Length: 236
Image 1 (cartoon, helix red, strand yellow):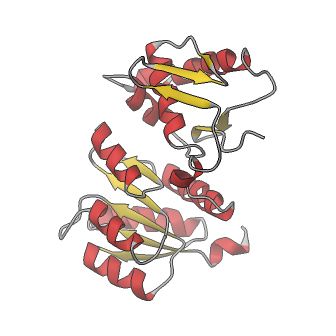
Image 2: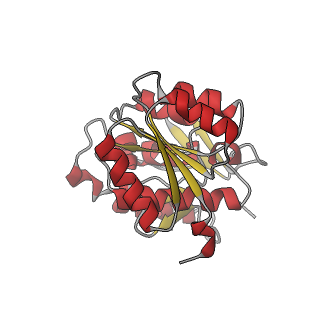
């Protein structure tokens, strides 16, 4: 196990003891050091006094919301945040990411997936970029036309189906961020279910083929084995 994991401290903000215990067990099994607090007020006090590599933050806290904690936390330190939420509506997902969240997981979730996403966010931080800042760096060859529900790639409109448009739009919204198959289906379908998750691979394969027809030398959609897909962060 890499020595860096043994020194990596993670703050877990979760008021349900059984969920907090599962998170701690999973993270510490991977070599991370964890600190748990059940309220937003305690979390903010700890972040002001102590350094953490990442915060796992429940949205539904007894004294405030995780969204509010994230905003106040980032006014003090730019620590990366993974939201845990029982709500999975698009509004909640968008709010969480737009206020500075780096990822989110909907309850119930797999502790194994959480630890994998923690590692993915930390890797992105080591590369020197937060996911919501990547899209501000330099021109992108992809443009979304909301009015026409169309996406252009190097100036050419891609012939996308409705599901492909929604799926690719989700990836474009946060370059470098890894979306699980379930999360992509939540974006792509009005009524996502477990069976439909298996169609994500087919949609991604089709999107890749259409983008390859424009630029064969690039791989804009990146596969993350065991996690899902992301949009490439660099185009050179």
